[in-house]
Image 1: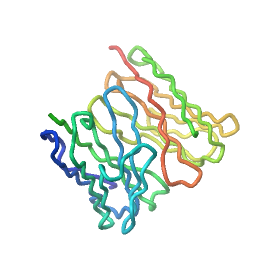
Image 2: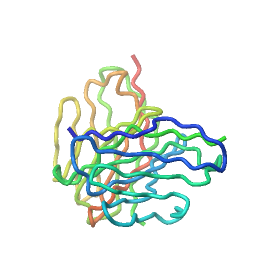
Image 3: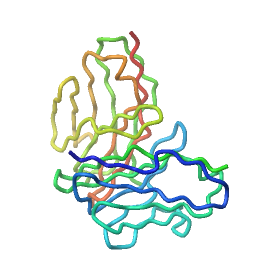
Length: 116
Length: 111
């Protein structure tokens, strides 16, 4: 149980284009999902907290107009990187909170974004 | 600024030894504590959670929590080369709405 999927797992795009990453909880309902970014050899950095049916809460320094988050249902959250630039190249990981098992977060497998 | 501190390592142990990973946190109101393992290029996977003071054992893993000292640790018995990874300590915030991660300790188990 508590499986989270992400799609795509790997994407390469040209600078200036937009990329959408999907995060799905496969066997549970997630009222809250989180989006993290991880640069090589660094720890996870929380970008935003996504609650179903409401606007995402962004961490300080994260541009909400650049990283669009939509949590349309209890099993799906999407992150769109708009007008991507090479410095946005990173490993993007989502996690889902299952309140059914206290407050444990389960992570998706991650999406590696490379912007040329 | 709520912080979670870990020694970055690398921590090197021989196969079969006990690996001890430590973590301290600054928010006294934290109630939930987690250890995640992350292999290079992969996302974190949950190893253990602990909520009460004392020890919690799961197979070769034992988590220890001391809220008075704001300290949480992970012991790995009979370490295997496959345990070589980065171990992330995570602590929830007081509201329970987000996890604060340490920077991770890299463990290397040599055969």
